[in-house]
Length: 487
Image (cartoon, rainbow, N blue to C red):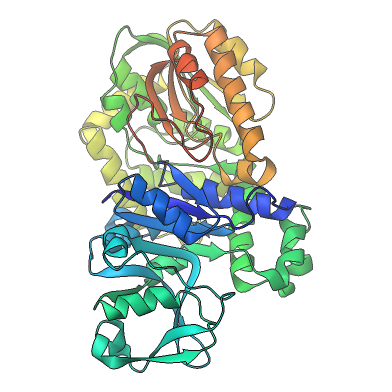
């Protein structure tokens, strides 16, 4: 991605309040849905950019504490870009110093909001590594834009001496002096990001974030970004434990590239999509291989059992209509794509997804033949919360023979971010891996860790050893010999 590196602007250093600490965690965690490399933390933009240059990066995306990236599930055939895809597209345009959310001050001076900026480090060094230009500085010379063309034409701007009350004015000035564009974030970028650090409403926001107050109690006192974020987040938090994934979001590339040895006696899987069966298909199985679904959503288990017992493997979209009727909302919360529920679903979208799934299996006839074999296997359904009591699952795994387990991103969800801090999530995860390695060291493992980094191609015993060597923390997850996956 053109050597893009992320930075975290933390002017508080280690002296963070409880709210600032939570906001910092959210900024880091939400970045990890699509970015899993090192995050550089500094108290100034200049400090972060210097670190990025030292690491030979070409671009640096800097977020301030409290800025959150919220990537949505857009279907491929929509051809709609999310935050990360749009940032990648910006990185293809090399004729700029900075991109961000632009604004004009009362005196029509162009400014850049510092909560999220993309800096071209090559151009940054060429123009002399200027300071960003921030609101608490003394009066300086700033550029006043007299027309839109001034963004890319240095002949259209003039310099006036006035109080420096505009964010990013030095970056704008140096851009125009060197005939560089000042890029504005697109709508696709802005739709998928929130600046939660709004001083005038922080007290009310903290009540929801830290004290679990009802959103309805304070929603008219929140900034628009805070309200929109809480509405999206609480939709997941309140419904996660009755959530249902009918299909898998992530690909099967990790399974197709894994080493294969003997046929599996058992596969353990969260109750989502068809990945459990893909594991069997790629690793091998026999007539008595057991499929064990575990999930913290009782509804996910019930829907999965209904599919196994009542579906013949043909025309999944048509069968989904039966599922919706048998397990209606709001008792079930279907994890569907962007702005979609059972009432407004576009069935052509589901058909697109299903045809993509069938292509992975070699076509409709091939899938149906394999499905008939899968559904005849013994199945078990276990209501297990991996963040709480999972001993019953370990008891089954211990006597499961040659086994494989897939937990998806169960340790990295909006639900877990909301209820537990980063240290707690890491502790839960390390205990999970340690216990798994102790009871079934040869069990093959697959999923995401507490930083949303992919884990695959390893046994539990080997993975525990690699995990114990990791010391990079939440800012610098260490690379494993695994295929990178998007969750």
